[in-house]
Length: 551
Image (tube, rainbow, N blue to C red; front, side, top):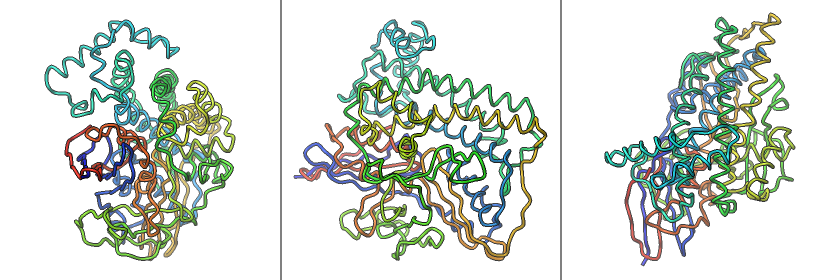
């Protein structure tokens, strides 16, 4: 007799995702990832003015909006052959940096962190010992005993009212929650502190973006916020950035390492074999040479395989997706032809279709994208800022470099790059101020729309490698294709049967209690999925199915 477990819906992600897992002898034997949303933006764009594409494509997501806007204007700029002014490049970096920091802080404290932190356990903590712990792991003067008593009181009020809100229906009390009550209370306090911090980063994003979450200041050829560049705005951005760096240095990164110290065995769980990053943050018009975070690929978990990434090697496979069958195509020739809307998920056969996500491949390989890919590539290239932070984190935890290829490594990499990017952003702010001081106020370049052209725009969003491809005919969009980070990470199998990155990462994951598969959530959440998700766990020994809600 087998056993089946179904978790649906799964929250703390963006969108709709279904994960089906087969468990045998206490470990995941097989996994299937199903994107349950049809995007359709590519179809909407056909026939529209290419200058509108960035406004529409950022509506793909309500979280990482700017990244699509930027990839879109880059695609059109590549097609029409315009080079943006240095000030526009810097301002785009400042907006992208704010997006990175906001996303990563929210991911750890409000989405992924609850897979490691037991909020209910915090009720039994000693506030005095929690204050001592806070002072031990951070150099910054921490919260006092009364502060932690107040946080504990707020948690008790939540529970006594029966309205747990974001903390409802989780696996509180699961035996694999390992933090002592005092550490859980500290993280609960920082959960609340991070809510205020993410508001600040949203405000920072809007200083040059005009608004958040959907900024309005991009244009093909540069940015439109030139008339509003002044000392007050630059000082405001710099002030908020410094506040944020203080939070990252003294709260975020120390918290990640403190939590990781209790879960070091997760340094061998949840890894993938291959990695891809397009790189991000151009520091001159020469790309990819000037990218602050470099582009690259790594295969078979070997840093000595590191090579520059080539957008010409991307293809999308639709064999197991709800699209008409056909050859794997490069996005520039890509097609979006859905079939059988509302089809049932079919993971039972090798031919069955089970996802709205296509299966992107790089040179035929399924590649993980995102913070871990960027940090591995930067480390492999001996990046002067990334490498020392990575090595210090590994020394603190007494873990080998190989531990990066894991769920724990993915979580650490996100904190590492947040710190490195934030520190470098200070230099970009000062560079912008220097340009303006010298009288260089240009923020946009002139260009003309050709009757016919093709182009692509690449960047690396917080969640990973992002690419937009555009074909223009009669000054209108003839074809548009997007290959987004969660398509890379959460895509299904391809025509060869090769699993997608999340499917690969889940195989081998221990599941101590199939009724409460906390371990599966840890690995899935570590990718920061941009689609909501249902998780289905199948145990062939009983065929039993459990249904319940989790957060």
